[in-house]
Length: 393
Image (cartoon, rainbow, N blue to C red; front, side, top):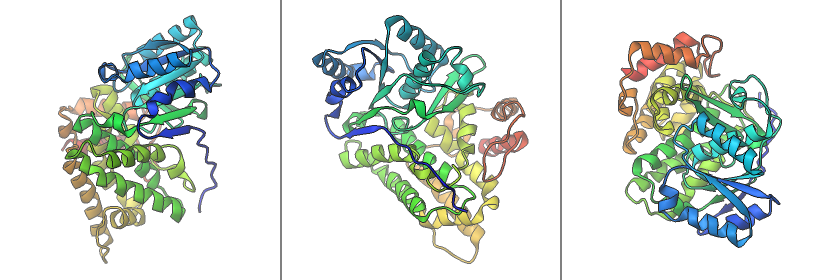
């Protein structure tokens, strides 16, 4: 049956060229006293973006401090540093300038400031947050969709555990999106971001519900749109393609693609989280590396859906042999990954994964044998290990 749903997307989106210059005005609307500007590496400094953000805040007379150093697969240690800094300085608003890692780190800091105890408890599912400092975003990478989502993913260096937490408390108040800010990204980062966007939609698309045709149609069109963005591999300065991908990234993860379904599968994200925690791989690339192995392992449990995906998204000609259509659809997606120079197995991530490491990945992914993952086919620790094995072949 079609699921009842609630759709909540409170983030104000300011989209287009030069919109980062409105950051000060947007922050002022939040009536805050002091802002933490949170960012990643030196790229936002070298590009001059950070200086433009500072100038915009200065123009509005807004007091601020800054904390950089966020890395891909953002670290819990920096989150703790940010929490202490915010409490010491009386920060009541966080402005994340960057991509998904920066935004996720900002959300974790916001949880830590507004709640007593160890913020990692939320990511370990030991308790629920009761609030979060308000967050604003100036987006520089189209990928994670964190600028409109309720999710945050953090890596704990103690055991290299990568865990996610979801709560509407952390949804950003506003998101500034200038596609021009993504034009200087390396090809690999652009392609990895495209995969991440597509996977956020596909994770929700593959489910056992009687889905809404409208949601399906939006999902399928979004996937085809992002695939068309392979033009960016040759024309990185194409504003239209950058804009399409940036908006797709937000829509893929703000809840719209889950309207009327059961929320989806999410096994690939769980599989990749462990790879990211152990090997620090780029998130989108890790997703591409495991997707084909996951799809072949579970497709017999949802043949109609995989057939629809093959025909409507990948353009496979329908035929009498359903399994052949399904396999062609999976192969077509893997071919797309190759076209944008993304991996289709673990070897493509330039890592060597031993048998013992695959067993450890499966153990951690199953939360030490205490849970299954996925809904297309519920995967236990042994299933997870077998998918890692297939991805390593």
